[in-house]
Length: 298
Image 1 (cartoon, rainbow, N blue to C red):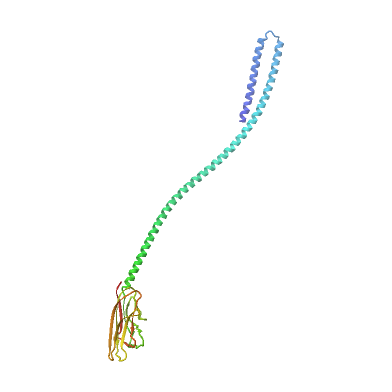
Image 2 (image 1 turned 30 degrees about the vertical axis):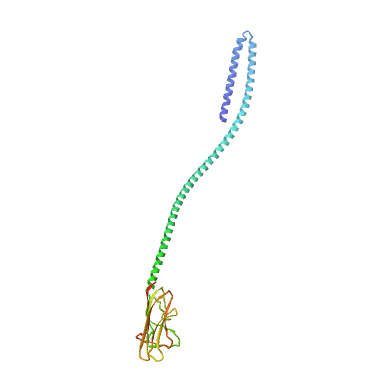
């Protein structure tokens, strides 16, 4: 802008001088026509005065042009300052645009990441639903397995308790007589031949019912013969006198037997009790025995 103003000023000055010269020449042509009768000295004096006036006008124009040039310089300086301010603002805007572009790229990258995370969340939700479904199915399978196991255990126990039977003789070995005692005494049959279900205890002589049902019991007692001591044993259920086997002879060998079918509850106790003041004989032939078995559950 400044260079343009510098070039414009000489052009304006030349234009003004050309205009002044043209006016002077025009005046010089007109004056002789109007003053054809004037003297030569008067024409020269008028020309000198006009030239003086023209120089005065040029100086005035130069002053005006100088003032105008100063004003233009001020204006150029202001324009330059405005231009620099605008350039700075443009640079700032460019920096802001660059930063905005970076933020836009970051936003796009984050948006893409958000979409990816949303897809992963959707997939995770599906996996979670599948896991929950599988967990429910596993719980159901486990419950069915537990039920099956319980059923198997129940069937196993039922099978086991349905297989209840025992048989035992009085003496574990040798030959001998048990009694007499001055009171009723429980008999313990120590030589166990079979004890399926382990319901009979060879240490106490007690049979304990493992399941509710009908049981059949048989017992035999051997007698060696004695005038003062008979041979006798009573079948006892929970302290109740059920049946008795009794024999009394003065000499020689004898025996007695009895049996009963009983309805027992779980935990009922059945055993044989030796009759007071009686003797029971047994030897290697096992004459005195106690047997029982489960007929059926109820």
